Length: 396
Length: 239
Image (cartoon, rainbow over all chains, first blue to last red; front, side, top):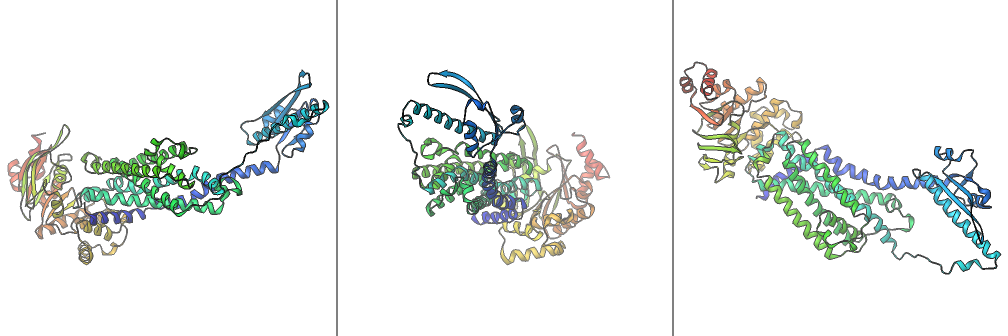
């Protein structure tokens, strides 16, 4: 293999790729626009909906309120619900005119007083109806407590007897770690997706594209060895992949700067910062991940007869990478099985998480790096073999 | 200059080229004539070291293609498929292949300028090839195949799909290369251009060399006055 020949192929591939609008679209434009949009738009939409619900409390109807004196007043004074009188509550609920119906009816007679049956009817497919249900349940619980307290007082018993202890939860995680936790759920998956997407067109164009436009044969008939050709093409794919990953990171950082509470989803009490070492670790593992996918993409492109066929082979990769991303979204790397650190993509996502949470386990990093390197070598060996197979290269 | 002995290529159960032998002398234009699928492209691909022969051997300019394939590739110019890089200019297309052949710097730029003049491409040398007509593209393909000034040329159906003007360009190029003393193997299924350009012809049919000789010798062998009739006669009995 000649470095000079590989360099010639690399610079050619890069020029050819950078003149392709599709590369710019997947490598720069989409990650730079879509990543901030995805990170900000979804949480903002949820936040806006919550605000809408808060500013106009869900309307509910009370049926049989006379059996529970004071309940309707409690509901009205809760601040989160608006009580309305409707002729046909069931129809109004079905039509969405009201968000819940609370039905009160006399229940069993107990020794300590009359019982009540309370049924809350709501529409599970409506977020506003869900909110109304939750708020009604809270009011009903408070009402029940008040009734119990009144009955105890009638018997001369202090109601505090029912509260033998007070449980309080206190968060000990630093604000930075909370921010990192939320980022760790979404950022590794997005980074992996863009690493795959970024190199896709360069890989397709590099072999399947050459076959389709009839330039592969003259290239193979030129003096450079097949190894030099593969090396040049591979590094070009790798570079576009790494750049796309880097731009996706910039997009994420931009989203973080524009609206941090949307990115971290926990309001103003969460912060995020990352030290240089952890940032470099994310970059390093991203490069290894890109190197792994670039080799696979080049191999798949070699097998394809045409650009379109290669697209068919390579596109599922970007979806495939989402699956481990979703599977590991709520998994704490420190509790994950050690075997998972040998599995490409999953291991990289775990290391990204550890770096974001500032809880890097260097054993995990070592296993991940070595494992990815072994996978890269295997994928490259397959690609090199494919480049020597006549049945693959001259498949038309 | 070129010696082919018992060249054979099998793809599974199919024998695409079967025990083909011929010699091509220095400065000779040798035609490989045959119908589509006769084995011409496979023969040329083996000589260009793109495919490894199942049996047989060949020497190109004295170099054994099985032992030193990279040296063979250095000494030949390949004009196979007519594809160019659409996003590169004509000049960049030629330059890329120059670099792949180890050329560089002022020497390469001078050679590119020569080729641009030879093929009257100056006007669109710095335009991207994606906008080119077939004729313009073919000029780029020819220029890149000879950028390293090879003594031997392999041309596989170089006029296929070209209009009359573009085909004429290829014919002129072959005639000019012959004048320069280059050795050429010219594969085609078009009788008239083989008759017009080639010194000797190998008629290939179903992978086998059916006949070999000058046009006059082939006409005599087939006892025909028309080359087309001679071809049909030479391969017809073997169908």
